[in-house]
Amino acid sequence: MSSLGTKRLGKELANEQVSKSLPPGITLVKADDLQEWLLDIQVLDQNPIYAGETYRLKFRFGKQYPIEPPEVVFTKQENRPIPMHPHIYSNGIICLDLLGSSGWSPVQNVESVCMSIQSMLTGNTKNHRPEGDADFVSTNKARPKDIEFYYHDNEV
Image (tube, rainbow, N blue to C red; front, top):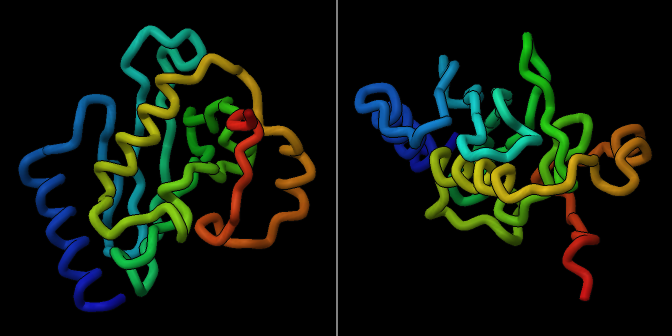
């Protein structure tokens, strides 16, 4: 990891552990190193799809972070399912523009990514996976941040 990435993640980690600065519904679970973090996320509104559920996010930081995005996926662990959502595949890959190379900005950080995902879940009204989920999960070999997604629900 670059010295910029090391400094940036060290600062983010210190802020989150010392001041507990994460927004409500987002909890840092594990950050033993500056390469992989686990966070739990909850939807705090009255969305019936996610009521009472807690989901686990895995962040992996590459050598070029924060210039390039981290890999962020949902993981199924313990009693943490992968949420049903039209932009979340059953293997945990999230199609969200800010997680891709073309939508990422170095001003983003762990907190802002979590808040964007939390907002994405909050606004969801469709309790299903993306179109072609089974085929995508069985054939995809690309890293999550290298996938160019097409958003079917954004068609005019």
